[in-house]
Length: 432
Ligand SMILES: [Zn+2]
Image (tube, rainbow, N blue to C red; front, side):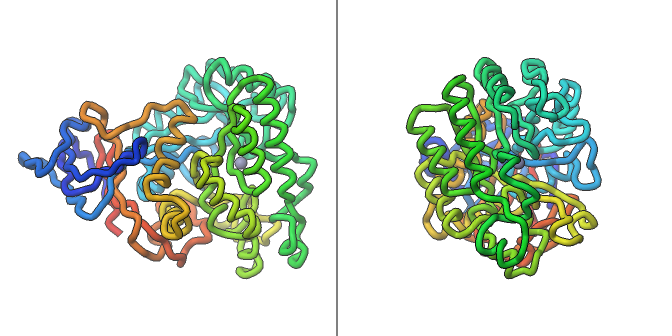
């Protein structure tokens, strides 16, 4: 990967894809002082650096609204800097990072620390702050102050906001602050030591199961609380068919509920754990589900019930994952493989068009988080991703830019490649 500061350049020969209108057009882009200066055909280079984007698509920069960058506190897994490298390789110019760090993002100084660290990279880093003090689920954090410091949403991710009364108050504030509460949907009493999805495969393997019910009960509760308070609730990492149905019904009734799905939840089923003999790189929360749920993710994406695609990029060091299945932590990397899986599972089989897929990682997350859209319009800061949706390639260990290695996709086929991002005056090119 090559990252350099390049304030002035011309991107030639690409096809611009407008994720808002769905329109595509051929145009060169002139960037001056990091801003889009001009769009047109056959723009002269005027001695500036030329990026050849022939046969490539260009859209506003991609955003992953759910990553874990582990800083502060667990820098041996990932730092904001290494996480942003993984993001850039994956084609993302923006991420929103979850607050289950150490200390958690429950005070304004931690929010500001993350904003400051993010500014040292080519990627826009948006902190999500805790709903509760210490992420303990007992009393509300100072949500207004956290927003003032730069928080774009609130979540206790890793854990649910379990107390219904606390969720009610959080959504009342969320409504006033116009920022969503993103809940890790899990009714804890319905998941006692579960290791994988509860079903036929967990029974055969003799592993304690996590029933889809644990997720669905919490989503049902939160949709009712969102209806009662008018506060926006966002369903983190949705994974079951019944959960999609609940969100679909909630939306139909005009309740402010939105949802995201992780790329692995529309790419893999729980049977992989049997096939790959307890590979801990297949252990995540929510767990991989059966094929019927995977199909429901695709249906939900297609009909708009599921707004956004995210990764839940969750780095863990090798020594943490190289243990027995039941002792391993939950979570896998996601940023480097997201687009290749979107291409393989959604675009190639015509579940989504390229533009609809791109909208799920550009327009949707930013709308949910009230972040202005970096449209490809003269005058705007240049924030864009250069990619294709066809290149077939094999994901290899050398493509990992995260500090950790915990991905089940080494050796897997990917369809579609992110070739470069431009953001904050930096051109980052993937040369592998
Ligand atoms: Zn979670």
